[in-house]
Amino acid sequence: MKKSILAAGAAMLALAPINAHAVTGNVIFNGTVTHTCTITVGGTAGSLDVDPGFQTLSSSIGSGSAGTATIVATGNGFDVSVDTPSLSKPAEDTTSETLSASYSTTGASSVSGTDASAANDLNNGTTNVSVNMQAAKSGSDVFEAGAYTGTVVLRCE
Image (tube, rainbow, N blue to C red; front, side, top):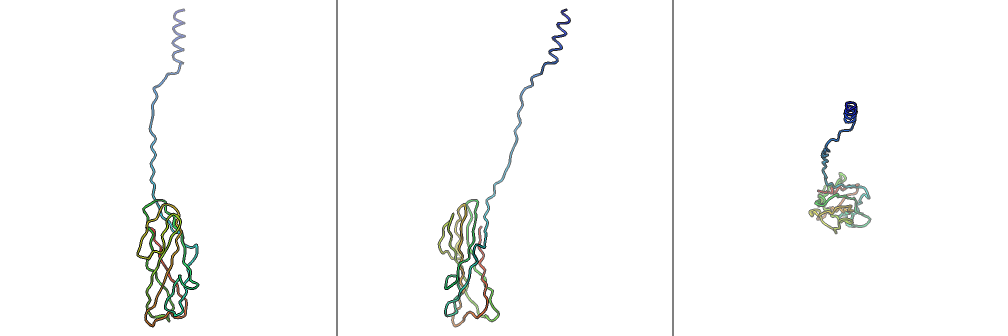
């Protein structure tokens, strides 16, 4: 009988679960955050009007209007600026002009009437930009009749 009790006990031990020691492992996660700055142009295209003496073509006079854009910066450290504009003009207009641009911003960043050579800090968030352009003739030169198209490059760097 002792042998059968020992055999039964041994069988029970063999069927009993064996407790293992707990182990752990680290699961690693990596990620990179990149701040971005995007420009969306097209809220409103600007328009140019000419002064009565036909020497100044500008978005700030008469029925002229500023062009608009929206800048979204996802972090600090970006600057906004504009380049000196370019002007397409009719073939009849053969004299030169001086071009300039300015901009102002509202929203996350607020800047008033800054000229093209100035870069301003942008804050994190959405900034609305209003861009103006001017072309000026000198002496007795005037803007000839025809279609003119100005382009101002808006930068976020």
